[in-house]
Amino acid sequence: MAGRPKKSNVVNTKQNDMLNELLNNVLKGTKALSEIKKECSILEWFDTGSASLNMLIYGDMFKGIPDNRCFQLVGDPSSSKSYLTKKAMKDAISKGWKILYIDTEGDIEPEELENAGLDISSVYIIDFSKDETGEKKKKKEDDVTGMLTTKKVINKIVAFIGACKPDSKIMIVVDSIGNLASSKEVTTAVEGKDTQDMSRAKDLKALFRMILNPAYRKRIPILLINHQYESIGLFTTKKVGGGMGSQFASSFIIELYKSQIKKGEEVIGITVTAKNKKNRFVQEYKTITFDILFNGGISRFSGIPELMFQYNIADKVNMGSKGTAFEIDGEKYALKEMTDDKWLEVIKKHNINERLSTHFKYSNQKQLKNIYEEIEEIAEENNEV
Image (cartoon, rainbow, N blue to C red; front, side, top):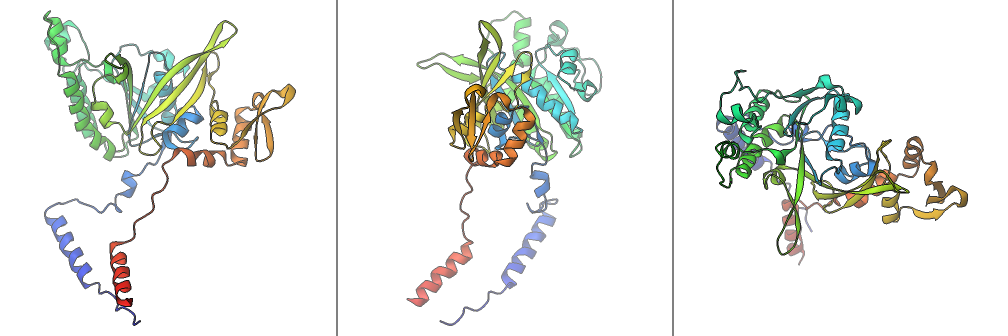
């Protein structure tokens, strides 16, 4: 069979010239995705302090929360939401980031942040009693209650993100998004009325519509802490506070539950179960656990042995006087002898991070062939027939 003549590039050149002319004259500033790849890519990650939670978030024990996404932690009271957020904030500050902290609950404690190892000179609290010009506000709900409302947050955050330069290394933290009240809700309470407010969820949706894309383009990560509550109906379900706005906006939603760790009758810590409810990188509904001890903090590699057993990467064995151990690639390691340094050595030696990652990340999809190649193959088959 005679070889096919080579395709001319004349048509493609004309198409490119026409497109470039349109972009330059009609959509000025438009760029090919290849030109802005770095702007859209994740460049840094913020460690949560837990190797298993990092794996659940991004499929890597040593990464964690990405630097240009909206991330949300939801859970029951005292399920370690704020604690884990502080861990991520501490790691961000150590990498040169500043934190814009929105405290909706009025319970931020500087000493608590310092005790957690944060440099509080890098944490900024917005004064919502003043408008964007710095003047004191004189609204009825401000004078009577001083409450932080959705409208105040919208105005401040939109103005702030608009003024930020790209790659300013600023992280926004909201603790908690579900605790924000609408202006109407506050005014109604001040006036003593008993009418139901339906504007809060609408305001929160508006907030995320206005800030999400600009924050993403300027590489401003947004960390949200949120509460869950039980919705009573035919079946009792868990719902996230503040409506659906934050759920649609968040690239990641991690749900937290806790159980007690006891030594005899004494409660010495909690085991946190984390469920992946929404994620672009890791398979949804994956679940991990990790321990937080009241006197020792987070156990960095807790939960990793359970994952290795679950995915048949290692076998659970007994080493007699050394107690429970795991066996991997023919070698045994007693769990009670596994320090953080020893874990790092074993993880590297046995490729545990990479082996676990294959069970968490989405599998690569088979790439489709170029449509022109498919057409040529079909034509070639027809000619041969």
